[in-house]
Length: 510
Image 1 (cartoon, rainbow, N blue to C red):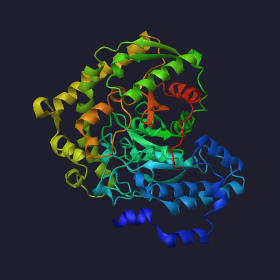
Image 2: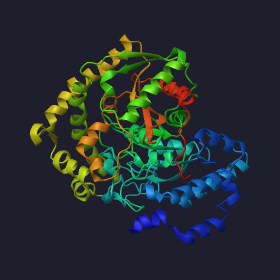
Image 3: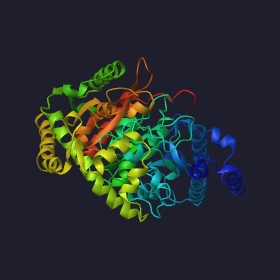
Image 4: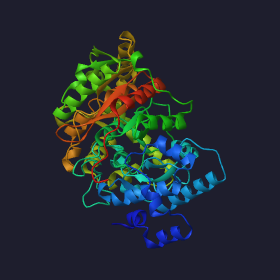
């Protein structure tokens, strides 16, 4: 274990002793009174506001579970000292009767491509280990201003370029790669892997990730958490290591959609979102998005649709002709072309002096290194028969023709069928074994099958946990995508669906 990881995780008896000497650690009895398995961010904030629990007790319990769950490789940096000091400050403020805040005293986590002042922002890659920002990214600053306690930075698929989370760079457990909260032999999904694993393992109730083609929805589907990919532009994107400015967005991830709603309101503003009346909701199902499903996912999705109908939701079959064709003309051309210029600009922002060539040379994940060396750096796109082509013509065509056509297809589908959303399995399969071939191109294409089209259209999508697979006992997720700008309506539907599907049982062993 290198020095940084030693510092991040094994702060040692000296720091623990210091914390106790200045009264930062609560009693074991106080910690034992907190049920992390059943807690939500909404309930935690209410209990903290009412003085039923202290932030010191809750934060200490979260940190203890994080350290007991090192086999998941969920964290790159665990900020025990900073988190406990922030918790103590919150408790002191409450003792002075300071006003309650939406996330006051609630422990959260932040994906490590989002900058947090005073903590390394590695984007999951070796060359950025030494980059320590002086300021919070705006999205992180909003959560901190709402009272959240940031306990650490979470591990991720390297540079956010993948769906498995199998990143060998940062390892605290016995085996590489971020591991699934429900089965540590399986992947956590990606690229916001550690945030999802931390929420699924009941370490925290909420956190932040980022999403380019599915990266807050895929890992939440596989770890049993809820998430929102907002309409692109709803949240500020400053101080976040990028892939594609056209496609990237930060996204809230949490135990329930009601918790996701709190984070969204903190970041984007607006009043409290009330649950939707499900009898006034109309949802479409597209047959093409039901391909390649494993048995557990197929059964869980069909059961979820029946639950929607029983709750009063109108569910109708709709057709989206040329969806896959248009999406194929947008996805890789946009992401791979913009990745070069956007990363060059970000590295300049870091003032580290690191070049994109140095970054590429140090990449430790074979799949990401292959993408950078073969496509991003030379500005190429994959072609037929293992050939490559110049990226610029395909990018121009995507932005001028294919992407507007894809957006029009979604607009027309929603409008002509009078839909609030379309529904589909978030991922076609439950979590697969955590091993290097989890990051294969075939698995990448498979797992973004349903999340990618909406990403390329820039529309919002929510992921809702609906079941544990009948045979695998692994989480299965349902996604709803809705028209651009309808985020609050979509979240309102999600909150109502919390009551339809309930919350998945906590992973065994907690």
